[in-house]
Image 1 (cartoon, rainbow, N blue to C red):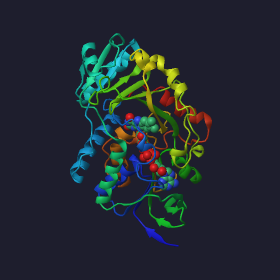
Image 2: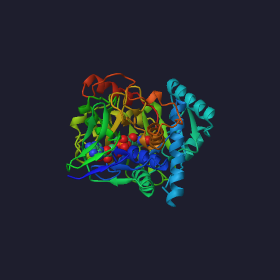
Image 3: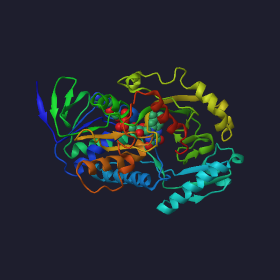
Image 4: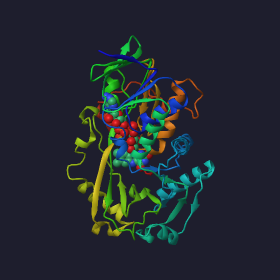
Length: 409
Ligand SMILES: Cc1cc2nc3c(=O)[nH]c(=O)nc-3n(C[C@H](O)[C@H](O)[C@H](O)COP(=O)(O)OP(=O)(O)OC[C@H]3O[C@@H](n4cnc5c(N)ncnc54)[C@H](O)[C@@H]3O)c2cc1C
């Protein structure tokens, strides 16, 4: 059987794996091979709502998102093509005391960081978002530099730029297991029986990451949690395509324009988690919600109807669901795994891999190469929870709670 040698192997061709490949190649990290068992950008990374929300409550997260914006600009220059970033801006709306606090916290975080932000009155909100019920708006902030981007196009952009810098990308190639010798990684065994040897292996297998690490005795602290959104039928007058995306913390909802329709994301009070071994290899074959999300939509619609009463009479054209990997503390999982030399985790996107993927890829590249990291990596350490069992239902519930409590975009 064939055997090859690489310096770094990356498992997973989603936003996180391809971003890591690009950042490593940019740093001349040697022979880099990326294996993706389906097609590049075909799994969770093709199902995102695609928001690149800049303002976060933690500065380290804003640094990481800023790096994604910078990476997008750099890749566009390198490829000589646009990745079609849509800078529509965002509007976050407070309707209650508690969401007013959320909005004020985000406003302060944005101001401190230097992100343009302004308070806007209800008339202006209505001008930007023609569908909104003005009386529901108590306070609103507008952030003109927020944007969204087609997540599959972004992922393919990372992959293309990585390939241009010499990364070998092998789609339709599944990794069967990570090879280990004593306490170090040795490489990977492919489904085909081929062995590839490398001293560094990055587990960026998204919702499936634990299926590769757990047989090595390593539980990564994250669980796939169902995320979803609905897309209305087209109504370009109500939903013009240049309108800002909106974040509605009181309804645990967000919206963004989508070619004449409106994407509506709603977070149910109790989000659903999945044991990693219950996921099919391709999410195309996963039945996330048997009734296409209708029961959830009608259960959550009351909160959203305060902003858009016509929701009950508006046609829904599509329902999109997928697994996002949540972590109990809502921070990512990035870095070396202490128990196994050369094994790195890049997962636990907490529903933010589009916004944060560019920065997450840079951080892991710097860690692998022993460079000074552009942000403090400690909050993302894979071992920060001690030993965990990702198949334990209490642990899975604690991850689902991180999504249930999320109020941001
Ligand atoms: C409905 C929804 C809405 C979202 N909205 C947003 C948003 O608005 N903004 C935002 O920032 N984020 C959003 N996200 C999150 C974002 O999509 C994810 O953070 C991102 O796609 C995660 O990328 P990934 O590379 O970790 O996972 P994936 O894209 O799933 O990539 C992992 C890859 O690993 C491969 N793989 C697995 N096992 C193996 C193996 N053994 N061998 C080889 N390959 C393997 C898989 O085939 C897969 O392609 C959303 C997610 C969902 C589901």
